[in-house]
Length: 92
Length: 83
Image 1 (cartoon, each protein chain N blue to C red):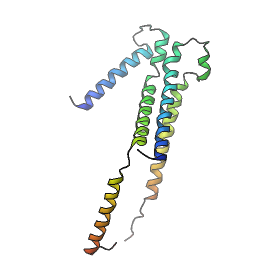
Image 2 (tube, each protein chain N blue to C red):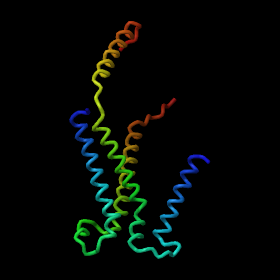
Image 3 (tube, rainbow over the protein chains, first blue to last red):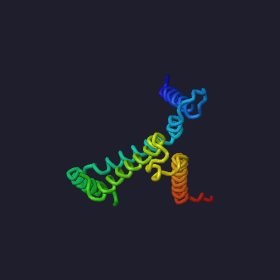
Image 4 (tube, chains in turn blue, orange):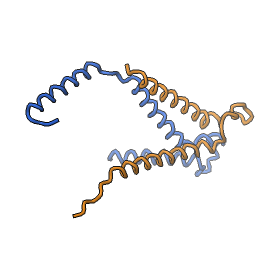
């Protein structure tokens, strides 16, 4: 089974369980509070995934290290390349 | 370590997403189990809004992305050469 099929199967199982609980399709008469918690689950999962993504981006932005040596080395290599290319006739 | 503005922006993103997650979690998961005359309900809108507000936010986000794409594509249009 391909990954796509696996994901679609998983998503449809979860969606079926959610629909069963939220809309009481099997007339299970669950307590009202559980139904009230279940029905906003799709937007809740989306919002929490969005929050997780935002937090990850923010955390990695705050902890990304500057690489001073690599920056200097890169500038030197750019200078070398410019000199070399000028010698070979490239107009800059 | 990342410097100045980067750290500030990153930290504010993390704090904002934590606050949003906590508020939304309390709204969706905790509130149904709390008695209707508890003080906590004062701080939260009716529960219908817990689905409507993210929906509105998603629509606005898609509109912004679409508008941005349209502006960029408009700026990059090249008039056809006439032979």
